[in-house]
Length: 141
Image 1 (cartoon, rainbow, N blue to C red):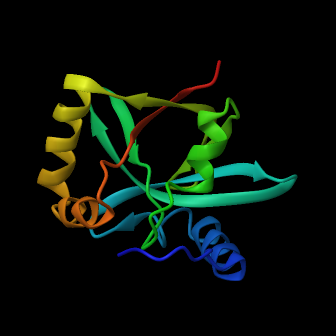
Image 2: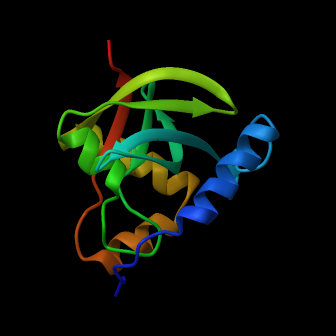
């Protein structure tokens, strides 16, 4: 079963600094999957999250889960409640984004593609005892 532990803010800051210093060369991929860095605010404090993302049907999709916890992640709680985040890929600012949950047949297609690229998600989702939300990051315009 997953634990409910908070991530280490010092580790997050160090990884973000390394990501920016190297233009996304370090921290830009995980197991061959490209990463997006989201900047958002939680309780008036700046925060961030590195998330693997997948391209599907012209959308950048992230899995709403947080490391080895059963938490969907602070970033998703914020976006689900109407907040926006700024996104970076390979050190390039993509601007403000919002999250749209993918459901139904579109989710099934996206999930199948994610499992092709990263089969480990199937095992993680089974351990979580609930489907992970899939979130499309779309421009917040």
